[in-house]
Length: 155
Image (cartoon, rainbow, N blue to C red):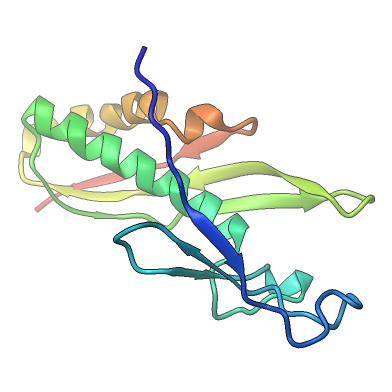
């Protein structure tokens, strides 16, 4: 079995001068960096006093699921002789907040729209989404349903 490790640096940038002296005294902003990559600017969801102009962890989880699925899907299509010329997704997830203030995701739905060249391979192209889902590292790490509702068109 192979193992892969990922190391990032997260730095809170939201100390407005008095730290966490009160719930309203600080910003939820942070930066994520990794060697050789541009920073990713994050904050909390605006519902939790975050900056709506930055990505929040919940959005990044949904984005990670969509990106992992896409990467596997493109790989599988290339192996199957299916030429994908466009791929877009508008993933959506639902999180529920529990009475104690915590919460969890209830589900995520991926909605990829794929454009292929080979007219006769539409059914196979749709089926490869199931295989991509089964191989996705991120989806395999989730304890909630990740559904996929693909649409495939021929260019």
